[in-house]
Amino acid sequence: MDSPGDEWQARQELAACYRVFDHLGWTELIYNHISLRVPGPERHFLINPFGLHYSEVRASNLVKVDLDGAIIGTSAWGINPAGFAPHATIHRAIERAHCVMHTHTTTGMAVACSAQGLSISNFYAAQLGERLAYHDFEGITVHADEGARLLANIGDRQAVILRNHGLLAWGETLPQTFHLLWTLQRACDVQVAGAALGPPLLVPEPIQRRCAADAHKVSASAAWGQDVFDALVRLVDRTDRSWRD
Image (cartoon, rainbow, N blue to C red):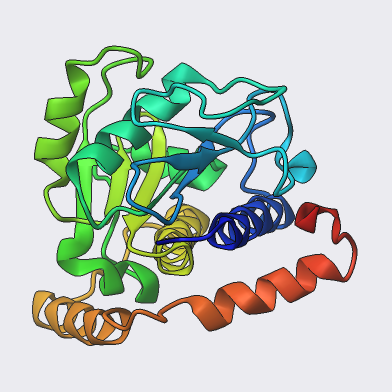
């Protein structure tokens, strides 16, 4: 049986991730979300309090909710129902989805708004291979019937471009999910930065497949992304350790 210490560890890991996102500039005022499953038999999840900037998130003020978004215990803050809806859909249907991240970065949204989507023309995009899915825009995510279509489009693919909207990733651990989203974000950064240079030089399909297969071998490890995430947490700690409280 999991102990309260397991939940606190999850709270600290998630709070650290919100601060890492803030450091990287992956913020959108008080919007967007990272959700993480609480260890234990219950399907409970931690998510940011609606109204706080990512730089204000702490382990203690994260909100614990069930799959319906009902708050477990007490909290001085509520959650954003529209923000939690797609997270709950993925957490409910995909057993391996212990963590879900969603962003509205400028370059991520630019690629999401592009008819061509992600161009497999750079080092990062080539690693995603068959792990990338697309979901068409249906407006603000408050309608329950969209969930079935979102899941059908995602399948088992962990990197998702929400067309006209932004980026999403899910994974078995928070560091794994972070590394996957970072790879997708970097692919978008490079694509947008090079757009003014003319048509991109596409990676040939055989090289795409080989690159994706090699990347998948590395990312299959349960510890994938942990060293990168730990390094960024140390970076955040140099200026502010309040997320640990």
